[in-house]
Length: 620
Image 1 (tube, rainbow, N blue to C red):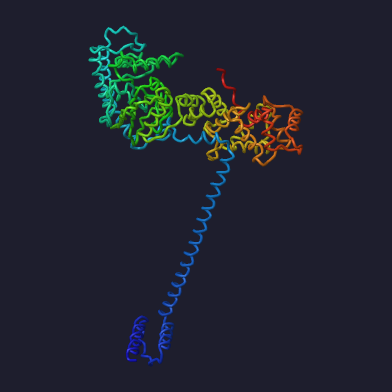
Image 2: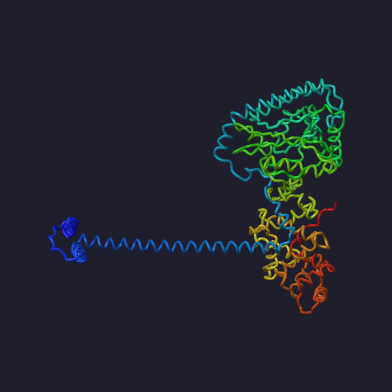
């Protein structure tokens, strides 16, 4: 009891100090509840006490509100996450259904479209401030000194090459029938060190080399990926080898003399027999005993330069002899300056200038073990080349693609048509295998796409697609004015959705090309006849369960300006013949059965929806 009374007095004394007002000693309470009640009354009676009570109440309300807000936010987050989860599932399901609707060959062809090996990493991007400052400073310091050094080294290489070729009777534009004599090669060998000095003048102070070049007796042929003009200089320094180059380079005054001293094989691109002639020379140098002590044959089987992000289609000249080859892979590590010499990149003069203005350039070469072909590979050059390509791609850490030299030619065609050069890369090897397409056919379709893409963006939105194709119809029909009928727009929109395989909302040249090739190869019972029929039906009807009425068939077969257009009477006769159950509508099964005997159905759709503006491919 004494302790409780003492505690009560201490509590009252503390409250008195808080309210800064002396409190008279209260009579001793009978119970603890009475004491608490008395304390509360005293607090409420004072101003500070009332303030404390109000503050405590506000704090309690804030705590309760924060707790309720946190609970509501957690519930909302869970609901959003749940909705996002189910939305993702439904989107994936819808995409899967759309993919199942599309022809399989279109999806298969676009699965290969990954990296573009003919586009520089700096293409279309402005140089950084650091790069601009470096170019401005190096133009007046490094560039003049390096140009003078390259000129002196070029003169030294030309002098050594002239001495090595002194008295040689073979014409400059023809390949050497036998290796240079030992005396001549004594003067030609120092050229390799001059080339290394030229690499030093280009900024390649240190070249990292992994592995070792194999002897000619183990690997008469050496194959390497091609990124820029530097690899021949590096390989000529490291390997006693001869190269294949265009006859224009071999015929040049200084460069041609050095190339002849290195026993380069010239290629006459204008000659129709050039490919066979070069293959015969490569086979002779790789297998004939007269060249047993000569240089190895160094080839770039890609046939062109790339940005190093993919291993493109190989030419077969290096693998036709059926002898062992040594793969070599090169890398150009860089942070600001991309040295790749590609079509969608800086031209050669600008590339050389930028390379000369770099403080340092980096080059890595890796000599892989010689690849000895099996009996099947020795008989099949394509199998041999594909297997070597996979080995080189694995060493580089890149993928093998179906790009070829024809893709570079298409880029030049796109430049003339004012289309983006990076959009003209279509993997010609893939198209040749799927649709048996050649470069002339693809170029004709590109001209058709350019006639639709008035802005030269390389891609069409849905409205641009409908407007461009409808305008082409009006021009063919001789009509003017007016908008696009809703039925025709629905069909064009269906075609757009089917061709837009990557679902970006735009139709690029590659997707348009695939649709055109699909219809061209499907007409007349071609390779993709079933896929073309399915594509046409889905564009017209929307689904396999839908049906076509008379008006839709009339619009399909009686389009003015269509070379496969039918008269209204003939179209209705064909409709009655296709409509087996005579219900006034055509089902998918009836359309599919009739298309085999009436190819004009698929031809009319092809001309109406996809290929109407495409000119016929050139003869031959």
